[in-house]
Image (cartoon, rainbow, N blue to C red):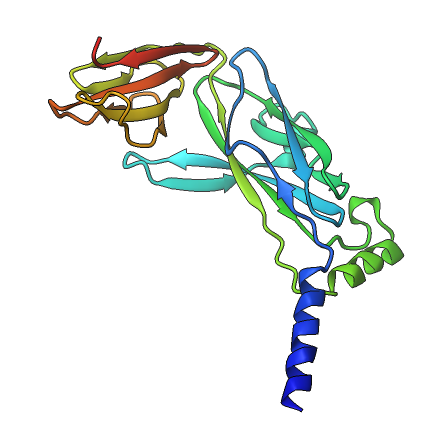
Length: 246
């Protein structure tokens, strides 16, 4: 009897592991809207074996003096109507149907309103089980999808990305001096692939990381006579390399 129960349990687990489910890939976690454009095309792929129904949700990120983040909803309805005083980022479309087996769908992130200072948005891509009337599905289509998903334990994984929206008059002024990098411009500067390496063994470096310097921020580099630092400074569409040995 025990062997029969174990066999049934294993059969159930095997069925669950092969249940159809979507698996989305949103690509880079950070996106940078060009200063001279108000649109950014974002592609989302589905490597799973079931159609992905994805809602796009956007909030504005606000930083206090200590760098603590709070988020506020974006009035998507006002932005869609082009309301005069509305400002913010919206997605068009805000709902995507992405075919299974490496299917792809794109949404356009559109900024509307004034861009006097840099703004930051969190964009979440959330797979859902669609309700009737949503995603242009009728009740029968919605129920069929739910039944297909109920075959296993479905944990839909959503992903959040951060979108940097620089001011329309973006100005970059990055200073590297005294073991410190400072952003004196009005738009975020990216320090990419920041590595600290041994002077005696130049190819022996710690794993590179990425640092975002918002306007007015500074970042201290490791200070040690036995090491040097190297990284790329990305200012909008421009990129330059820095090596502290030079």
